[in-house]
Length: 125
Picture 1 (tube, rainbow, N blue to C red):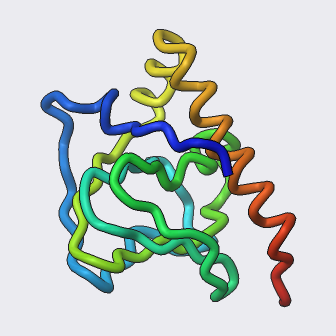
Picture 2 (picture 1 turned 45 degrees about the vertical axis):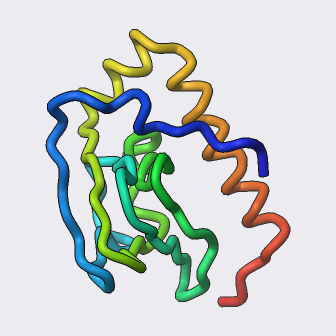
């Protein structure tokens, strides 16, 4: 995977922060999604069809695909440790893309990395 961009660098102000305890589910595969999240602290696990794909730590984003394509969640994300996440709604996401082009490039990089990761780890049904 390519070098990860630390998305917390873009969200250091008065953004709302949501706390999760280890074991809490942030969202489930198949649910509607209207928020993406920047992991501020802790570690989260991304799972598709009960297969662990990736650990998302501080600076990572999760849930971005639902904002890109308006489809249900493609994965389940669970807190592995106590976590804090910064929710980003569609309006904030669109604002960042329009006003900060490198934000969009970094989101596309995350999507590309995850797609490439799926291609090397085919999932059984």
